[in-house]
Image: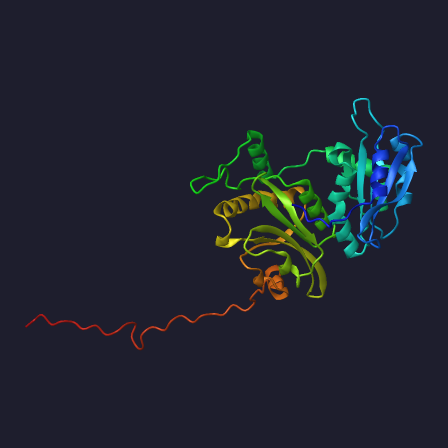
Amino acid sequence: MSHQTGIRASQDLLALFADAKNEQSSVRVIKVTIDTTSDPEQLVESGRDDVNGTWENDFGKICPMVQDKEACYIFYKFDRKADDQNTKWLFVMYIPDNSPPKSKMLYASTKSTCKSEFGGKQFIADEVNPSTKAELTLDGYEAHVEHKAAPVPLSMDELEIQRIKESEIRADVNVDSKHQTMQGVAFPLSEDAMDALQSLKDGRITFVQLNLDLGKETIELSDTNTCDVNSLSSHIPEGTSRYNFFCFKHQYEGDYKEDVVFIYSMGGYSSPIKERMLFSSGKAPCLSVVEDHLGIPLVKKVEIDSTEKITADSMMDIVHPIRSVHKPKFDRPKGPGGRSGARRIIKNTDN
């Protein structure tokens, strides 16, 4: 289950959503922000504009609605096609790189709720997650569409995963079962999990935690955060398995570095054997998606059975292990003194 903030849409925004989705509505674009001054915090309308031309001609309405350093959501209506049962919309989560870290985390964590309040996939035909205004132009969106349609080069691991999916093999896991491949069993990552990992790659958050849904056989988002290494251990539960991705921000030899570390926290014998087996088997295919498909370089991959082992010093040792420059030379053991060997006693057989 995704880690959500509990922020919901205001009644006025829900009414606007309902009206805008009506095929007779003239609304082209809606801007939504999170009102942090209200109690409770809620999603509210921060601007709208009407249809003037085709959706391509009206696309320029989006840029003037966003502001520097201000995160927001945008709902943009495409032109209705004859075979469309509902109006189709583009969902935009705009989080500038220079937004405050708290704002980045808040908007990333509320994204799923905002889409759900609007109506979800029934109305949202596409979505983008830009961080610059250049990406909010028609050229920027067309580049996104072209990139999305282009075939992605597959690694050897991904080809094996694809082969397993195509053959629709499902492993019946028990103590006598065998793995399908040497790489493990591939469980698909949910949309929320992929979005969170992309936010980690873009620097909007520093921590992503994934959990394996044993019932659906999918990898789901469990938590996101902007924590630092000192509070990292508090976000990793004890006694249960998780896949954790942490961006370790630090100084090393005078240089500022942001290194992503994969931490496989194992539940140990307190967790069910099926859970331990599936987490272990699904780890390699999951990392293949993260590294090869999403393009997130993982500088280190570690396994832990206790969060007590996660400290700033231990993380530094993991990312930058101490290398011994001095190699001590060991003297060859000395042989017996004097001769090359001990004096042998020869038995006299003449008598």
